[in-house]
Amino acid sequence: MKVLITGATGLVGSALVEELQKQNVPVNFLTTNKGKIVSEKGYQGYYWNPSTGEMDTAAFEGVTDIINLAGATISKRWTSSYKKTVLDSRINSLITLYNGLERFGPDAIRSFVSASAIGIYPHSLTTFYEEGATEVDDSFLGEVVKSWEDKIDTFRTFGCKVTKIRIGLVLSDQGGALPKIASPIKYYAGAAFGSGHQWQSWIHITDLARMFIYVIEQGLSGTFNGVAPNPVTNSKLTKEVAKALKKPLFLPNIPKGIMQLFLGEMAYLLFASQRVSSKRIEKKGFQYMYSNICSALESFYDEADCNKESSVTTYERNFS
Image (cartoon, rainbow, N blue to C red):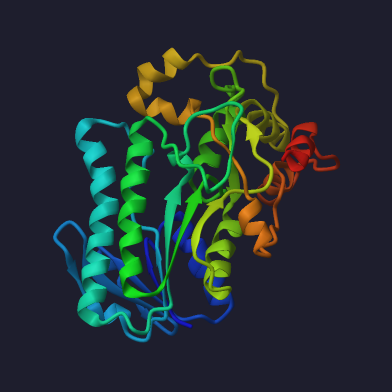
């Protein structure tokens, strides 16, 4: 087993590389920054430029499985030009990979596993989404994910297993959403957004990295939700982070209009609600290290109190 990763130096990619190295699995990775190209035992970088279609196809040497994590962050103001960047970064990366693999020869590739996002699911406070849902969210993010997944599916022509992992809110103390949630709470300025009732389908970064590897090891294909078993509301998430930090919450919820003023259309991310099921990957035998929000936060904050599981978590675990 040898894995080629795009986006290997990002938040999720770094965690994935760490997990693979623990298992002594050699990794090749693609980067647009020539300064990041390193050559170490079991970890070899190669240059590519998806915006121009350039790629060093030597990156495929000895590779049995490909993991695609490439794509510009959605956590920047959604101007017209940046919207184009978000979509193009995903589509062009896949086109460049596809063309490179076609030139090199795809015979040795067993699986192609790509990141996707739960943003494809329509906003809802009541629906419990499984992978078979066909309706697409009527938003910029929904449009991006639909185009992204359509392009991922083209890799089926190579005869390898193709898998999409629809990632939820990734929890890590190294970056992403959690430090942004925790920062105002640390300074007594934390509060939920809007009604606070919107669902947050989250996953611990370690479990997400393990899930990508599990899909490859088990030869799985199709679509899986990259979320933990117990989604929580925005209000519950905010309260649990405050509890873990041992900080009070006393400010009123932040109105949607205020965040739209500061963030523009990107404020949609704070108020969208997707309650997403992890049952399909669990039925394939995947076991989570962090199945509830309290245990996940405890792994980041040593003083978190996880003596009891919340009623929301218990309800969600039994919901069907």
